[in-house]
Length: 199
Image (tube, rainbow, N blue to C red):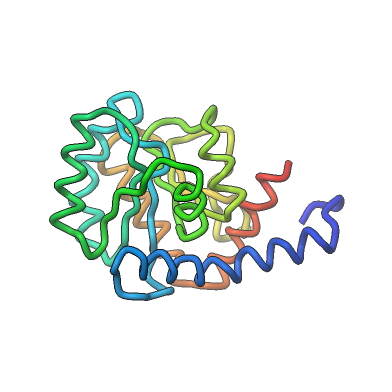
Protein backbone atom coordinates (compact mmCIF):
# COMPACT_ATOMS: atom_id res chain seq x y z
CA UNK A 1 0.00 0.00 0.00
CA UNK A 2 1.13 3.56 -0.60
CA UNK A 3 2.20 5.61 2.40
CA UNK A 4 -1.05 7.58 2.04
CA UNK A 5 -3.24 4.49 2.26
CA UNK A 6 -5.21 4.39 5.48
CA UNK A 7 -5.90 1.35 7.60
CA UNK A 8 -9.55 1.72 6.55
CA UNK A 9 -8.52 1.40 2.88
CA UNK A 10 -6.50 -1.71 3.69
CA UNK A 11 -9.51 -3.23 5.42
CA UNK A 12 -11.72 -2.38 2.44
CA UNK A 13 -9.25 -4.05 0.08
CA UNK A 14 -9.11 -7.18 2.23
CA UNK A 15 -12.92 -7.29 2.37
CA UNK A 16 -13.14 -6.93 -1.40
CA UNK A 17 -10.72 -9.80 -1.97
CA UNK A 18 -12.50 -12.00 0.56
CA UNK A 19 -15.85 -11.32 -1.13
CA UNK A 20 -14.68 -12.26 -4.65
CA UNK A 21 -15.11 -16.00 -4.12
CA UNK A 22 -18.61 -15.42 -2.75
CA UNK A 23 -19.52 -13.22 -5.74
CA UNK A 24 -18.18 -15.83 -8.14
CA UNK A 25 -20.18 -18.66 -6.58
CA UNK A 26 -23.32 -16.50 -6.59
CA UNK A 27 -22.93 -15.75 -10.32
CA UNK A 28 -22.15 -19.38 -11.12
CA UNK A 29 -25.38 -20.42 -9.40
CA UNK A 30 -27.37 -17.76 -11.25
CA UNK A 31 -25.98 -19.04 -14.55
CA UNK A 32 -26.75 -22.66 -13.64
CA UNK A 33 -23.07 -23.54 -13.47
CA UNK A 34 -21.37 -25.72 -10.89
CA UNK A 35 -20.39 -23.58 -7.90
CA UNK A 36 -16.59 -23.72 -7.89
CA UNK A 37 -14.93 -20.76 -6.23
CA UNK A 38 -11.46 -21.90 -7.29
CA UNK A 39 -12.25 -22.20 -11.01
CA UNK A 40 -10.71 -19.21 -12.84
CA UNK A 41 -13.16 -16.79 -14.45
CA UNK A 42 -12.04 -14.64 -17.37
CA UNK A 43 -14.18 -11.69 -18.43
CA UNK A 44 -14.17 -9.72 -21.65
CA UNK A 45 -15.56 -6.45 -20.27
CA UNK A 46 -15.41 -4.17 -23.31
CA UNK A 47 -17.91 -5.82 -25.61
CA UNK A 48 -16.74 -7.17 -28.97
CA UNK A 49 -16.32 -5.42 -32.31
CA UNK A 50 -13.64 -5.13 -35.00
CA UNK A 51 -12.24 -2.06 -33.25
CA UNK A 52 -12.12 -3.93 -29.93
CA UNK A 53 -10.20 -6.93 -31.26
CA UNK A 54 -13.06 -9.16 -32.32
CA UNK A 55 -11.01 -11.12 -34.85
CA UNK A 56 -8.28 -11.76 -32.29
CA UNK A 57 -10.91 -13.04 -29.87
CA UNK A 58 -12.22 -15.49 -32.48
CA UNK A 59 -8.67 -16.78 -32.94
CA UNK A 60 -7.88 -17.13 -29.25
CA UNK A 61 -11.24 -18.56 -28.09
CA UNK A 62 -10.53 -22.18 -29.12
CA UNK A 63 -7.43 -22.13 -26.93
CA UNK A 64 -9.32 -20.63 -24.02
CA UNK A 65 -12.08 -23.20 -24.36
CA UNK A 66 -9.51 -25.99 -24.22
CA UNK A 67 -8.59 -24.89 -20.68
CA UNK A 68 -10.55 -25.28 -17.42
CA UNK A 69 -11.83 -21.71 -17.34
CA UNK A 70 -15.18 -19.94 -17.36
CA UNK A 71 -15.71 -16.98 -19.66
CA UNK A 72 -18.00 -13.99 -19.18
CA UNK A 73 -18.54 -11.71 -22.19
CA UNK A 74 -20.24 -8.35 -21.85
CA UNK A 75 -23.13 -8.25 -24.29
CA UNK A 76 -22.34 -5.19 -26.36
CA UNK A 77 -20.60 -4.58 -29.67
CA UNK A 78 -21.35 -5.36 -33.29
CA UNK A 79 -24.20 -7.65 -34.33
CA UNK A 80 -22.01 -10.07 -36.31
CA UNK A 81 -19.90 -10.87 -33.26
CA UNK A 82 -23.02 -11.01 -31.14
CA UNK A 83 -24.40 -13.83 -33.26
CA UNK A 84 -21.09 -15.68 -33.23
CA UNK A 85 -20.65 -15.37 -29.45
CA UNK A 86 -24.28 -16.31 -28.78
CA UNK A 87 -23.65 -19.55 -30.66
CA UNK A 88 -20.49 -20.15 -28.63
CA UNK A 89 -22.38 -19.49 -25.39
CA UNK A 90 -25.06 -22.01 -26.40
CA UNK A 91 -22.50 -24.64 -27.36
CA UNK A 92 -20.51 -24.16 -24.15
CA UNK A 93 -23.43 -23.19 -21.92
CA UNK A 94 -21.82 -24.70 -18.82
CA UNK A 95 -18.93 -22.22 -18.89
CA UNK A 96 -19.48 -19.36 -21.36
CA UNK A 97 -22.08 -16.66 -20.74
CA UNK A 98 -23.11 -13.39 -22.34
CA UNK A 99 -23.68 -10.84 -19.55
CA UNK A 100 -26.36 -8.15 -20.07
CA UNK A 101 -25.01 -4.64 -20.60
CA UNK A 102 -26.51 -2.84 -17.61
CA UNK A 103 -25.00 -1.46 -14.42
CA UNK A 104 -26.18 -4.26 -12.14
CA UNK A 105 -24.83 -7.06 -14.32
CA UNK A 106 -21.60 -5.21 -15.14
CA UNK A 107 -20.92 -4.80 -11.42
CA UNK A 108 -21.52 -8.51 -10.88
CA UNK A 109 -19.26 -9.38 -13.83
CA UNK A 110 -16.32 -7.50 -12.32
CA UNK A 111 -17.03 -8.70 -8.77
CA UNK A 112 -16.97 -12.35 -9.88
CA UNK A 113 -14.07 -12.28 -12.36
CA UNK A 114 -10.43 -13.12 -11.75
CA UNK A 115 -9.00 -11.77 -15.02
CA UNK A 116 -10.08 -9.25 -17.63
CA UNK A 117 -8.97 -9.98 -21.19
CA UNK A 118 -8.41 -6.90 -23.34
CA UNK A 119 -7.76 -7.42 -27.05
CA UNK A 120 -6.71 -3.85 -27.86
CA UNK A 121 -4.78 -1.24 -25.88
CA UNK A 122 -7.00 -0.46 -22.87
CA UNK A 123 -5.22 2.77 -21.87
CA UNK A 124 -8.23 5.01 -22.49
CA UNK A 125 -10.87 2.50 -21.46
CA UNK A 126 -12.94 3.02 -18.32
CA UNK A 127 -13.18 -0.79 -18.09
CA UNK A 128 -9.48 -1.01 -17.22
CA UNK A 129 -9.87 1.25 -14.20
CA UNK A 130 -12.97 -0.64 -13.11
CA UNK A 131 -11.17 -3.97 -13.44
CA UNK A 132 -8.34 -2.70 -11.24
CA UNK A 133 -10.79 -1.38 -8.65
CA UNK A 134 -12.39 -4.82 -8.43
CA UNK A 135 -9.01 -6.61 -8.29
CA UNK A 136 -9.63 -8.19 -11.69
CA UNK A 137 -6.17 -8.72 -13.14
CA UNK A 138 -5.76 -7.36 -16.68
CA UNK A 139 -4.40 -9.48 -19.51
CA UNK A 140 -3.80 -6.92 -22.22
CA UNK A 141 -1.54 -5.56 -24.96
CA UNK A 142 1.55 -3.62 -23.91
CA UNK A 143 0.50 -0.33 -22.31
CA UNK A 144 1.87 2.31 -19.97
CA UNK A 145 -1.33 2.22 -17.93
CA UNK A 146 -0.33 -0.91 -15.99
CA UNK A 147 2.92 -2.71 -15.20
CA UNK A 148 3.70 -6.28 -16.14
CA UNK A 149 3.76 -8.69 -13.23
CA UNK A 150 7.32 -9.58 -12.28
CA UNK A 151 7.38 -12.72 -10.10
CA UNK A 152 10.97 -12.13 -8.99
CA UNK A 153 10.28 -8.61 -7.77
CA UNK A 154 6.67 -9.35 -6.77
CA UNK A 155 5.73 -6.17 -8.61
CA UNK A 156 3.20 -5.24 -11.29
CA UNK A 157 -0.49 -5.90 -11.69
CA UNK A 158 -1.05 -7.22 -15.22
CA UNK A 159 -0.04 -9.84 -17.76
CA UNK A 160 0.99 -8.07 -20.95
CA UNK A 161 1.55 -9.25 -24.49
CA UNK A 162 3.75 -7.37 -26.94
CA UNK A 163 2.05 -8.17 -30.24
CA UNK A 164 -1.60 -8.43 -31.28
CA UNK A 165 -1.30 -12.04 -32.36
CA UNK A 166 -3.16 -15.10 -31.15
CA UNK A 167 0.06 -16.69 -29.86
CA UNK A 168 1.18 -13.68 -27.84
CA UNK A 169 -2.31 -13.15 -26.42
CA UNK A 170 -2.79 -16.81 -25.55
CA UNK A 171 0.66 -17.01 -23.93
CA UNK A 172 -0.23 -14.09 -21.65
CA UNK A 173 -3.46 -15.83 -20.60
CA UNK A 174 -1.52 -19.02 -19.89
CA UNK A 175 0.99 -17.09 -17.74
CA UNK A 176 -1.91 -15.61 -15.79
CA UNK A 177 -3.55 -18.99 -15.30
CA UNK A 178 -0.27 -20.54 -14.16
CA UNK A 179 0.11 -17.77 -11.57
CA UNK A 180 -3.52 -18.17 -10.48
CA UNK A 181 -2.59 -21.62 -9.21
CA UNK A 182 -0.56 -19.93 -6.45
CA UNK A 183 -3.08 -18.13 -4.18
CA UNK A 184 -0.51 -16.05 -2.28
CA UNK A 185 1.04 -14.68 -5.47
CA UNK A 186 -2.37 -14.06 -6.98
CA UNK A 187 -3.60 -12.14 -3.96
CA UNK A 188 -0.43 -10.02 -4.08
CA UNK A 189 -1.21 -9.04 -7.68
CA UNK A 190 -4.83 -8.32 -6.75
CA UNK A 191 -3.61 -5.92 -4.06
CA UNK A 192 -1.38 -4.24 -6.63
CA UNK A 193 -4.45 -3.78 -8.86
CA UNK A 194 -6.34 -2.02 -6.07
CA UNK A 195 -3.32 0.16 -5.32
CA UNK A 196 -2.96 1.09 -9.00
CA UNK A 197 -6.62 2.04 -9.26
CA UNK A 198 -6.29 4.43 -6.31
CA UNK A 199 -3.40 6.41 -7.79
